[in-house]
Image 1 (cartoon, helix red, strand yellow):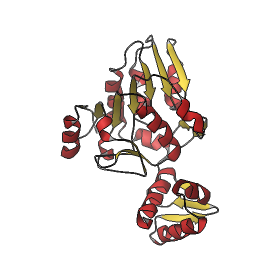
Image 2: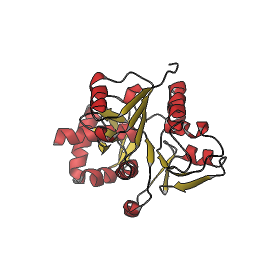
Image 3: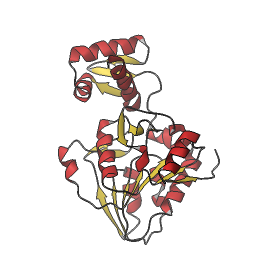
Length: 254
């Protein structure tokens, strides 16, 4: 239990860049003294350093959005283009936060009539050029590092939109832990959306396969379509095929 918690704290701080002791106590449901002992072990391992009121990553921190946007940009653009072909008039869709999902709306025709729910700032901006799009924004707290909105309101669960397609991203994708994310606030939105639609489109590059992070928001078997630019590991491919999911590998320069 302790070692798992320490690993999870390490994953969380690497994802967010920094986190307070108060946040860690709330997330893991333990005392400040317990968290401080966990932090001391992470500091000894060289993974984090102490700052006033919390800790921050000193190895493999979350890259700024602009840097992540540039990485594998052509692949992500192609994934977004393929995903856009599944969007049809009168759809009610969700588009997730992330550098790959941000590519979708650039490839959707300007006169399309759809309803979009999103917490993705870039998608929000792109919708201003599409006069027939009805736009709903989820989340009340803006996260600069991911250019997305998250929500601390427990009433989020009362959202009752009938979403017929959701285009989602993940930090990690594995059979054992499904689709994972390390941010508790983003996790709540992702989990909610995945519970409200049976047509889930997963958009990821090959670096996400075989990885798990802090929080599982959706089991892998619920995915309807996987769109990726890389080679899908054999075990994940066989698992998805067994559960009748479609796999689309785009051809894009690396």
